[in-house]
Length: 77
Image 1: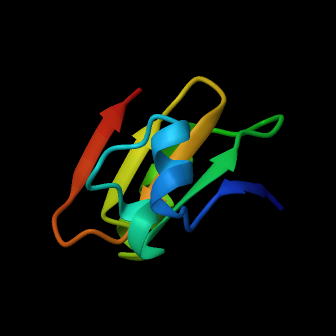
Image 2 (image 1 turned 45 degrees about the vertical axis):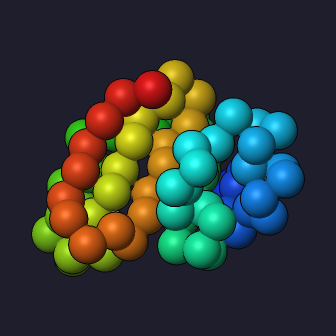
């Protein structure tokens, strides 16, 4: 189980939280999940790559961003 902390964001809220002007959240194409005890970023990344679920994955200290952009991208916040 995991907790989704962000998904679709209206433009004004995206600006308040410092989201990009081209954020995938603006089109309901992204989510952020909170890390849980035992969360292993590399395992998560391997699963979503193998299953071709998410192309965009960004790693924060306490959360992971996932989205369905057209190209594969990985980054750290």
